[in-house]
Length: 442
Image (cartoon, rainbow, N blue to C red; front, side, top):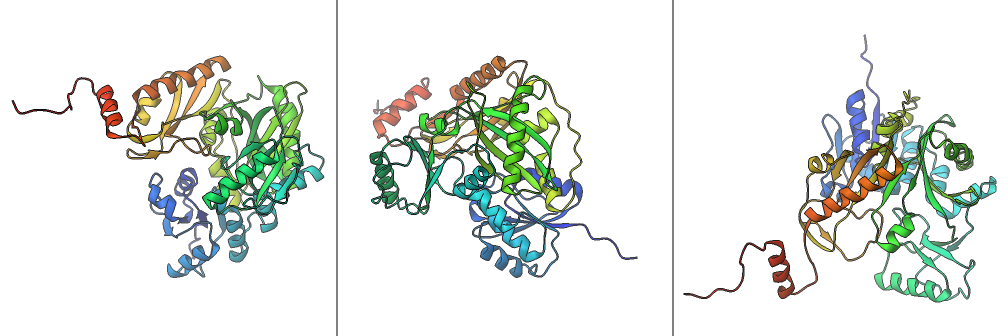
């Protein structure tokens, strides 16, 4: 009797929870790991999964060549999955080539290109910002006036709020253009979006066969653009289906209509919306056909007993996730632990952070020796993250502040861009009991 072979999946990127799901379920996985992910070294590919190293994990060419070099070029694959935003379209093209059922390339493109995404959602009657494409942000000389009184300039297919800024005049736009031209940015196609004020909400969930099986709503303490603009630490809190029933009553219909317009049939999603507290109206902002970053996975496991990455793997294999949703009525949220400009030489361990009152989980993501530049360029810049459970929204915010203050007092960062005199002064402040001053023979 022939032994049934386990399913085989091609995973682009090292999503720790997707890898864990494959090991736990006995799924044969080939894990594509780009040079930058491999060099980072935080997430290792566990045995018996197969590591496939490539220069760039968003390159179909690099991946296909690596598969052939490994003798896997003509192997059977039952699914393709990725949590890497930059690899979504690549994954869709590879799935088509390998004969797997995944997000089709047309749908994948609409989940990446902000202008196409908003056009499709707007055509379905969902409120969203107007958008104008700038083909080359290095040359905006032909733009004599802004299409909107206040606009947001961003890459057409970016992530993590990188190179995203508010512009209120042609002078602002030209200043950004000059800055990006001088930096010789690889990203050249940008969009100008009509500025939408309000709270920034998030929706994270699972779709199978076009049905939303699960959706959890939450909100950022400050909109992502405000976080980058004001150099703040990002934090998220979750809405409770019972205590915040009003949020789900208003939010879920917008989420469903947006997903239907974008054509997502199977997989997980991370959507952002803008909520006007005065009118209660919600506007679509953008959506990714992958699980969200930060501690969104951990938040949903803690509050709802839902494993997003496990569901993503099952959906990629054409299996319907079987969910046992149980929601914890406490207030849950994740927050970032920030650094300062300079060289990181010491900080509390994850176990020490997790031992603080109310902290359920912590992860330190940057090793000693990491250099932090001046200024916050995206929402990804941080030392680590932590998850908090509390009995009220006020207590949640208080725990965030307490843990951050405690952590900041214990972080040791050698300041950068200063002379030896300033470094010696820092050294005296850091180790006041030790004398490193000049000495004379006596």
